[in-house]
Length: 155
Image 1 (cartoon, rainbow, N blue to C red):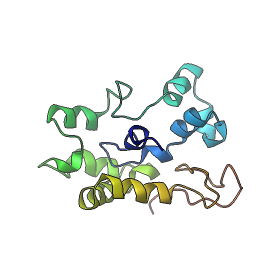
Image 2 (image 1 turned 90 degrees about the vertical axis):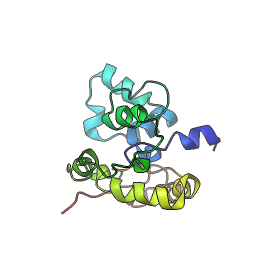
Image 3 (image 1 turned 30 degrees about the vertical axis):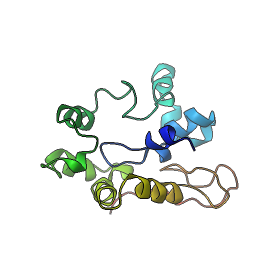
């Protein structure tokens, strides 16, 4: 994987972009990565999400509160902020969206282990044994049909 593409999977919030169904569907041109809810979006909105290069690339997610805050402090990662974890992160981590639920822990691991180790760990977590990429909400691998390990809602 090209280093620039690999680094584009890093986020401010702690999510791993490499497991985003929209991003996977957009880069692979395979809509099996999309949830039914995503497939039901208006075509213009769906195209916006399918074209996402990652929140740190270009202006795609210029409206993201984490991005705005981090950039205003000249930070590459929220976890490097003196105020981390702030209320915004606490709320995000507990907002009921399954792939947000481990964001605080993920950012702490990122800080402790560094970007390369964190990316290695995430890539391993979100790759099927057959080599196909997995997304946060897939129940089965798009390649081999093996049961996937999607994020789950918090109890």
